[in-house]
Image (tube, helix red, strand yellow):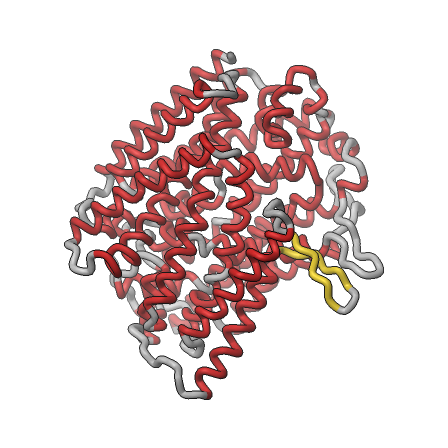
Length: 512
Length: 74
């Protein structure tokens, strides 16, 4: 066991836990109100919003999985950069409108918005369920990040002893989320980002110096990995999958319930807009994180005898932990590993709050207890946030890790299918709720079918049209079908005069 | 604190949409940037081209933000 690294790791973890508990007193509000517990009272200013949104999108899993992809397949893994570069301009034009309308009508979730805009409880229910289902495996996946670093510290990686540290970490997370709500991840996100930035920037300076410069690192990567496969006679090579994956992920990323929770907690839409100017700093950081996959490959870490058993257990996911262990002293390894583990806690906390908000607002209050008091509503959300997390913990302890990864892929495809309802709804009321429901069903059905033909192991589907084989992101193809169905069905429903005209919002509600 | 003054109203016009579209197009033109040369400090073109668009996209979003608020203040 790596003593120095473990002590620093545990020390930072304890510090974070205390911070999480103390957070309930920060900008304190009445936590028996759902918008206080679940949205931090909508009082977060530009800096906290920046940390919260960033802490949300760049999870421990990103830290582990993106370099792992680059390590094993090369250039294709860099789709992560176009994905984040696309995400901010796209959402800059959409989401301040969602913030404005939500603030005026006290919407807590995207389903609240859809319910009011399209006057359609069934569409709202479908969106809430989609969000909850997509979020569950995502929370479970955060644990994978913690598992890898705990294993790399030298703790046992099999049996109950391996699950013990993970279980303790999760109980801590569950309790401080329960008591402090969204304030806890907001405060912790600041520390998490400091640790991540220090680790990433240090690795970017030290490793190239030790390896003889960027030139030497890139020279050790085979040509076939350095570039994307170009198109040939009847396919677009990796171009089409690279582009559709970047686009699809960019659309999906801000539709995840936890992203919307972080957004809606901002103080004003102007806070959000100013935020967007600085959010691309995270894109640069993600680019650096992706490069670490090449550092690890170039250093030949998987061929070193001391890492053999780790690569056998964790595969390419060991690239970043291995890089830290190989090039850095134990105290720095402790800091880097703590960054990964705390990087898991922040999004996991926000995700469980988001899922709890969805369940409470759009299922419990809508169908089970419509007359609930504010305190009952907030109490139910706290309880659900606990259940969701323990569900995720059981998932990861009892079921092979690969299932969580596969389900998370499917979750991304599902999340993308709520785009038409939300994005079009922010600008136009032309679409009909029933048509959007049909489009959603078509998209989800087609998306699930595509990944089932891939045995749920991947999300790049080969579409055959006019003798061409176009490899693309299944979620993107499903979204195209979804939109097509929604447009045609709306046209038919409107022509038949069967469209619902109800709309609980006014045009002026969206402007701010 | 939650009141929104009319001076802060932002609207996206053609100029703002163009400004926001530029970084998007830059990272989507894969056939253009899928090459090794010209390399920069040993970093192949593909990688430094994508890398510089992270800070550049910030700049374009800032321009879209500034121009949209100025337009409505008049």
